[in-house]
Length: 594
Image (cartoon, rainbow, N blue to C red; front, side):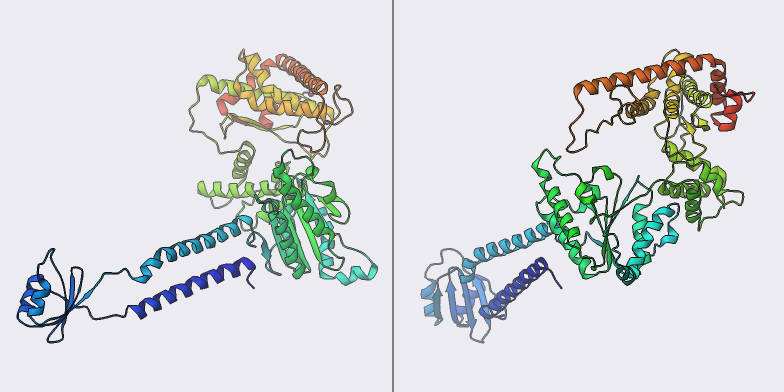
């Protein structure tokens, strides 16, 4: 069935077609098609009437239309100032009629008709633009019919706990009577939250595939429009479709775009966002227990969502979706390895151990990059060499730029810088072990030191965070010791170190300035910012923490300067060293860490 705007456009189109048809019929009636008369020159016309061959003429201004005695019609144009033409025609016995040139009646109406046509066209064009701009069309809602989603729980790995929580939702959609018999109510809303790439959207599609019910998906940003009220209209339209197709699943991706906390906006332009959120809250409240409509949503930032959206009765169940552990990464790699030709010696377990912190999207990209590299190298199978290169690409953000010409002085400085990172990471208790060090440029980095934890971490102690700070400052301290001064190559290290130190002081309660208090971010709506005195105290303590770390790292590297120089020399010669080779140079006798 057509909506109101489509019906309006259809009526306008039909009206224009009828007007055009009537105009054509009118022209055919008043101006029937006649045979075209022969065109005579004035000389031939004069000879004809003097010879008595012209029967009658009709003269209009300077145009003469007439009929010869044999019945043939003709037309001629008179020259200017023809004297005594009427008398000569009368002497020749030609019947004469005269007409005054008048403008056809329809020419007077033509400007009005053209104006009317232009106005009708503008109205039709404006309605089309308004329809597209205001989002009345339903094309923004992506719908999947039952059975159309080919993704199931078998295609999702590494997040078994999330599966378990959502299996109840699937079971309810399949067998609602079982839950109603015991008086249980399935959660009306399920919120999936976690870092990007962990599989939140994929899990929602898997739920739709497993349940075999209609699936309506929409992004949070699609609700918020320029025109006030359009977002709320879209929410009503979405849930109206859902109720007609119940039982079904409504999935809102990136819900933080529309579900942010209210009251924190400084400008009236955010009224549209709040109206949309209010409509969403109303629609979720309006669900009955037997409607069979389950709302799922995904976000990377649950902390910015409005509390009214998270209360029981709306998003009853909140499911964290974090990066997978080593066993989960192994399962994810096994899924994405299907259809790829792997070398028999390639161990997915070894790859999983080397990719701590990688999300499901990172692992999928890792295997795809490895497959592309294998094709580029002319190999029939993916080997560990391609996996290592792909890991470097994912971590460093780009391919190796081996063709880049580097001055010897810069190459030595980069080698010293990366050697500083590696030496500090190897000799500092609590630091992640070194996996690889390279001075081959990648992306915007002149080189990088890859450190990976041996086991997955959920919590970090102050000792471990201080060790990470020391590793970050190891590069610039090494430059100061071996090269006499630091360079701009430590920019990214300083940025990360400053952010980590600020979080230790203001977030984790590891500082003295604010004590056991978490300082809110500047983008927390409704929360007053920290006072100027506290902000200044935090900045001073961050500077003191970084300065103290700088002194510790400098003392450590000076105490092991020979090892720093040896590792930098090996890097300058070989460009890339594995973790075992680094430890052999830094700790040749397997001595205990300092």
